[in-house]
Length: 395
Image 1 (cartoon, rainbow, N blue to C red):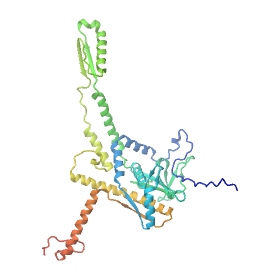
Image 2 (tube, rainbow, N blue to C red; image 1 turned 135 degrees about the horizontal axis):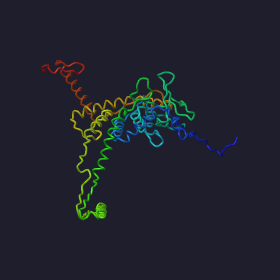
Image 3 (cartoon, rainbow, N blue to C red; image 1 turned 90 degrees about the vertical axis):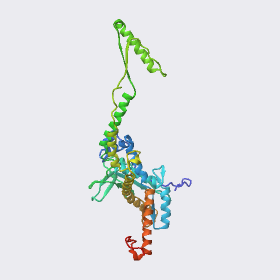
Image 4 (cartoon, rainbow, N blue to C red; image 1 turned 45 degrees about the horizontal axis):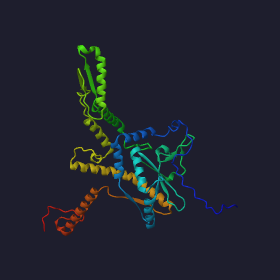
């Protein structure tokens, strides 16, 4: 047996199952990958976020407003390992921390309606890693029953192949229709109104190029004695006018004869685009579920209306938290199994905003006062639940 000078055998690097395989691709390979569902639709949603800043800002607002969380375990040893994992887990090779993984996962979920991630087991003695899979490299297919979904990746042969360890892949969908595997994007329904808004903005830019950048019309009417030299006079006037307009400093234009100068489009009124643009923006904001004041839209709103809009946004975020909570609990359970711990974990979210904490503190204070009054004055209508009859006569 030959030893290589005591060189220690290196552990194999962890392999990501849902990453793009380094294989040779045909120049027209997009035709072979046409079986991937929703590829054109995903490209459309990316274009919407790039072309309309309000949509992109709303998605990032939702990602930031989802808030922070903690994974709680029953075992104290498992809890310490879980907290360290949430802080130090490698994400996509360049990031670190479970928060980065959840942010990209949630952004993908909002944009496309479907999000896929993977937990990658590390070498012995190392932490597992997390990877946000691209939907271009993942295919979801129905399994043997309607309750099963197969996670597949494209293969050089043309047919998708199921990943070797589907239990390590995390999938989430929102607003999925009955009988469908893929979810529906938050941006679904916006391409039509967004196209109208882009036409309005493009027209505004074109009108400013035509009217805002002033062009002049110089008309020379030769007299009866100047008709024989009208061509030379016109060329001379054109040259002097060109010098006057190209001069970096203000310069006078002097001409002899009947010369008329007018601004092109001076009598054209710029069309008002505020009303139609606001109409389209109202449709977009209503679909995104973000209050207008969070997007920098200074629309007239009362304090009560803003409070109601904040409550509606809170309910939207609670819905997304429930979707992400199931994924996080499964992720925590996989981590505990990989580390040899037993039991399960649960997700504890922090309050969404300071306003919620204030309202919660007020409600607790009012309940404590009601119980104190019921305990001090039982003969005046108090009961065990803290209800107090204010119509009773004081003792």
